[in-house]
Length: 285
Image (cartoon, rainbow, N blue to C red; front, top):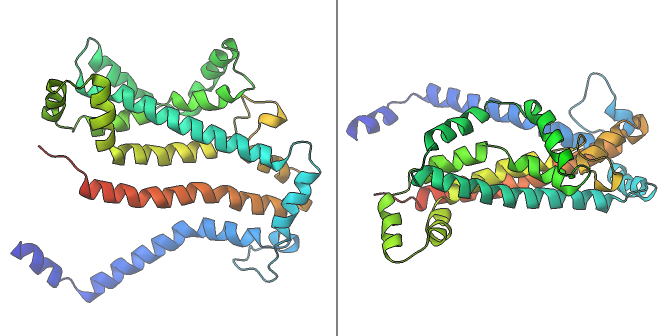
């Protein structure tokens, strides 16, 4: 303890200043895309295409946001429909994936059965595959199941990912076996052991999984599975507006900003919960 304290006291002012400068530069570089998206949403059309790009707004306007309502009033499908599709698929997919990943990870971590080691290796290996690799098999399976051009085709592919199972396995495997045995001796069923003891105790894991799943589902297009305009998602609508030309550039910038906000808010809220839970709710033998 004395050695560690002496190292902290002898750290030079130059070292602290250099570390602070590095963190400020890294933070600014990370925040630059978001800042540029914000100012673009308030730029008039004539400022959006200036070269070189300007990182400030000279004539800020709210017309990009008000034009969203006007543009959608002229469309066959209202904006509310795109919002509902995106929110519904994000919420449903996140809840289903977190539950399935957690329930699959529990027996893989705390039960012994034939083929367990092989199944774990398959799950870990599946993380290495890009989503594009599984796109064609997913389309064939969904087509044979009659789920193409429906909400099932937007939700089910996200449930098939193995990252969530791997993440939950890492947390559940560290849970004390003695606690589980004591619960079984007291007459608690396996379902009760999981939902009453294990699942609440691995809150950091499923909060982290919620963040990743929400971001993935919120930004998906689902264009390869959905063809009806009434079932399309917000990112698809933004892409269609951007293809309309310069006239719709301001509306596209405003919608892109609005599309970024919900995942960021969820991330900021869940980030604090993860840190607090990791610090105060760990179970040790």
